[in-house]
Image 1 (cartoon, rainbow, N blue to C red):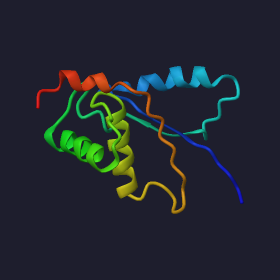
Image 2: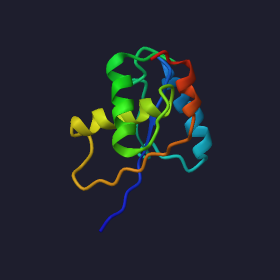
Image 3: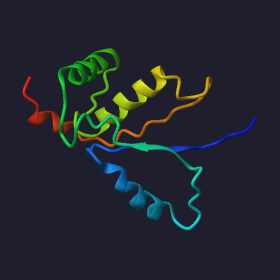
Image 4: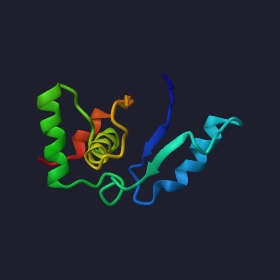
Length: 113
C-alpha cells in the first residue's frame, strides 16, 4: 500500500493562479512540484463573488442533501470544482478526497434569491 498526498487549490479570482507563488512560500523549502496536483481559477465563474443560477442551485441542493452549507464566494467554488473534476474522471478510482471547509457562510448575505 502506497500513500500519496496531493494538494489542490481552487481560487475564487478570475486570474488567481498567481496565488500559487504564495502557496509555494507557505509550503516552505521542502516544496516539491509534485505536491500541487491542481491549482486553477477554472471554477471561479468569471471572478470573485461571481455566480450563476446553475451554481447557486447546486449549492442549495447540496445543503438540502447533506446539511452542509457552502458559501458561494469561496468554499462553494471549491466543492463545485471537485464535483466537476470527479465527473471528468480526474481522480484515480479509490482515491480519498479531503476538502477543507473554512467557513464563510456569511457570503450568502450578498446573494439575492
